[in-house]
Image 1 (tube, helix red, strand yellow):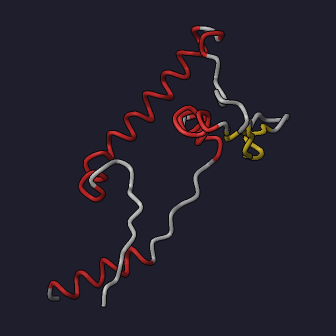
Image 2 (cartoon, helix red, strand yellow; image 1 turned 120 degrees about the horizontal axis):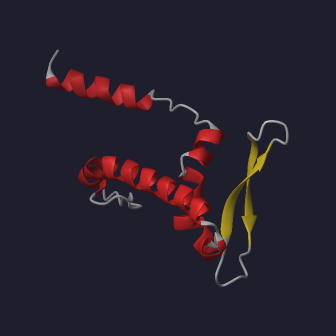
Image 3 (cartoon, rainbow, N blue to C red; image 1 turned 30 degrees about the vertical axis):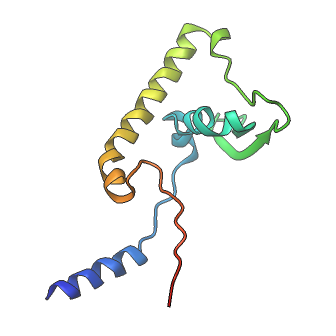
Length: 125
């Protein structure tokens, strides 16, 4: 197989790539929900929220809440929470920071930044 064939195979693999679904309980419990809210949604006046099943405390649904007219947006109120609650939140933050760090080099190599820029291609013929 020559190099051209290998590139075509890689391209086909990427095109047929189907990501897995992620368990909503794990999304909440590991800190993805907390950090998505704290870092992105809350400052914008939005919050990803979950409704838990009354029987087993599992995530039943996820929805978006908004306070778009509030200049402060949402907050967790860490100053008013117990030390134990804040330690749980800190551990979730730490886990997400570590996950971000694992991907840092690859994303910077691919995009020049952790955040993918929106690129407009202008085709000149």
